[in-house]
Length: 190
Image (cartoon, rainbow, N blue to C red; front, side, top):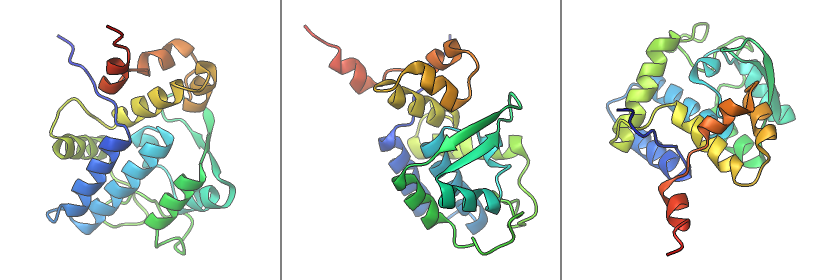
């Protein structure tokens, strides 16, 4: 039986950040990595392995131009990300090390600015934390991607979403669109 995967919406995102801020058992570097990860996942819907490749120069580009071209890890194609004023504001709050070397990673392995953590290990860390914070194994880092796509689908043409998210086939984008419980409750007419 395939279990239902839940989307991470603004409500779940805030719960995750609150849980993270209150967790005193996490090392400072891990906490910073998770805070950066959750914030960027929420605003962009990128994959975690794409985040681990970002450097300080990329953050500076985001803050300066409100956009960033990334090479998608999965398809090896470029895609352009755009950032709202709220995203820029929240991202700017996270980084007190913008004066560091442009080649420093934003997700760091044990605080080492020249090395990012192993992708699979970090994805596992992120997923376990999300599940702990939300007290459910129905969530993963990909739930951020599904949540963003679902939110976008309520007012934006699916073809545009497909291009923004980096899918070459609109059918793939359609698989991500999942109604939340409140969306389904609004469908009740009798």
